Image (spheres, rainbow, N blue to C red):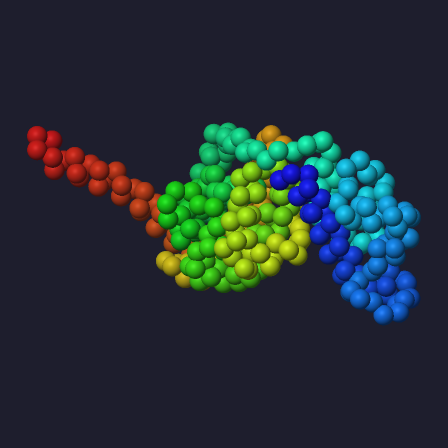
Length: 301
């Protein structure tokens, strides 16, 4: 993305947050008939302690060089939560360079110790994704859980979610999961506005999927991803799992996110995870047996 694209993100984000606040919420009188919902720019400016001209310029996307104190004042006035405030600062940080040509971020390999850790999780499904939702690593149970998405190599879960019709059957609450995918992509775009692969992905999904396009325009942000998710697994049936995601240590631009799915001890979901684990183990152990059987059947073997 170019600087102009970054300005568009700043403009749309600030305007959307201004629109969701009413004068009554911030202690102001209604102020007569309003053509658009939410606060007026001059009202935000007064509450933030800046001039109307200055805030208008900021909302047009001119965020480079704005001091942290002023950004905090704007964030406080617009009642941004912690994640939204972080996103605003990410936008300001990304706007600092004089120019920003789209470029592909070089893929960062995971340390082999990460794969050892994943493989040691025998009763939890684990996957590692990058900021674009490409699956870059997983354990056997993670691949078994996400088997509908693992049709040809490691999938991109954003494409699977919005472009594969089967995803609506796989996720019991497709809408909520869709919102999480888009919010995490939006957060990543704020951090790395010049990532060409991310730009291409967003362009592809916006063009092909009206559902993605609508959600992308809301500028929802998500940094900490945890909760519960129910899958409609083709082999195990409905299975509700708790999950949590955390960033793996590494280069600042790697963006590797580890997500682990677990079940409540003694629950039906745990039994289904155990079934998937044993089913996966049977498949893996059968492969060398079949290979040996083929070799034994060869002439002269």
